[in-house]
Amino acid sequence: MTQKKFIDSPYVEQMCKITHGLYVHGWDERNGGNVSYRLTEEEVSQYVDTDKVLRNEPIDFDASELAGQYYLVTGTGRYFKNVIDNPEGDAGLVQIAADGHSVDIHWGYNDGAQPTSEFPAHLMTHINRQHVDSKQRIVMHCHPTNLVAMSFTVPLNEKIMTRILWKMQAESIVVFPEGLGVIPYMTPGTNAIGEATAEKMKDFRLVLWPQHGVFAAGDTMDETFGLIETIEKAALIYTTIQSQGGNILQEITDTDLADLTTRFGLKPNPEYMVGDSLVTGK
Ligand code: 13P
Ligand code: ZN
Image (tube, rainbow, N blue to C red; front, side, top):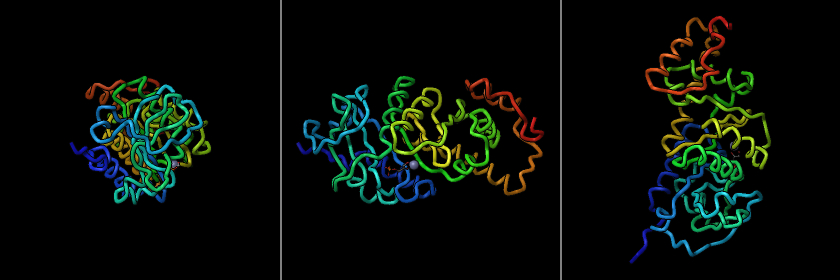
């Protein structure tokens, strides 16, 4: 029996499409951004001989809680512009080793590449999101322009940020009723930023990295990309309002937000439901 090739699998196809989508939106310049996709043994074994390990790479934190799990993940330093034409070089399929301190590479990274430098943040996020909901399989990081710009002009406060973004369009609270988690500015690619992000991911599916980008988690590629699209659209509306002079005459009121939660059966963070008006500032 000839085994189906992993490069022809729907998982690689989805990775190619989503990295291309992130690139064309302008959210992943150069090597910006990274994506990880948890796959099951059943899915992987249709394409890959899981007894065969191409090589092993160390990771410098304890991922033993994920031991045995498979992740399709983009490579460090790789340009999202190129993944669509070179998935076997720019992405790889890894399995977390039993001791949690290294990964076995089963496919990809065929020119010596390694998982993203943000792998600690991805794996720590996967750990916490699986505790919340075992269906969550995707972690996505990118650099959406307007949301990052807001991290310069809006206080780094979850309630303030969330309420502005919820009030930019009716869709926002429906798509991210938990709101936006915010960490301080931190050095990328470190275990520390991974720990801070994962801590926020206990309560949020979107976490802002000020002056850098956003981390998002979800069940599917589409859903996770959709989260980022929606919050970035809200941020674009905010930017546009500012460029029109910033004088807000009318808004989605707190009563309107409450009506949205009733209509769509949402359970938003109640602390964010009441606060200052964007029109009066109080
Ligand atoms: P990598 O190239 O290591 O994935 O890093 C890109 C990035 O966005 C860092 O935050
Ligand atoms: Zn980044």
